[in-house]
Image (cartoon, rainbow, N blue to C red):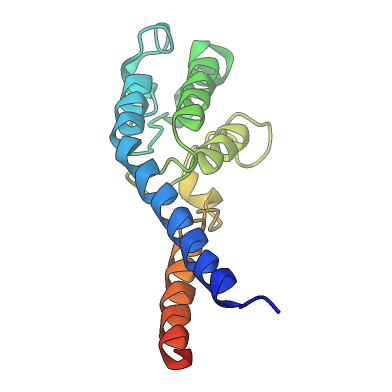
Length: 157
């Protein structure tokens, strides 16, 4: 009968590999931040929309009610959608300073340019529904199970 000890040693190594892969992936996070800010400064994205109506890193679309038709029927809507696509490709879960996600701003754009009672309302705060990812919790669980496993091994040996 084979000893369960080699199998027991493989589990912590697998947990350590998962932990290291998530830590090593964070080394290049600054690169994503740089790419995200390049989206805002990209002259190929924003070139026809007035700067007063542009989406900024704070997550605000400062479009007055009187300018809704100009925003929705002109280049601003398309250029803002291009900016959101750029941010979505640069980050998995980009958050603006006001904690709005790309999805919340996209929903605000749809509502603000719709022909409903929400027309002219470009506030992403009305569309934030807790869509923030909880992917980082896996690393915490792996670490917890690894520590519990090591404690269990100490009692066995």
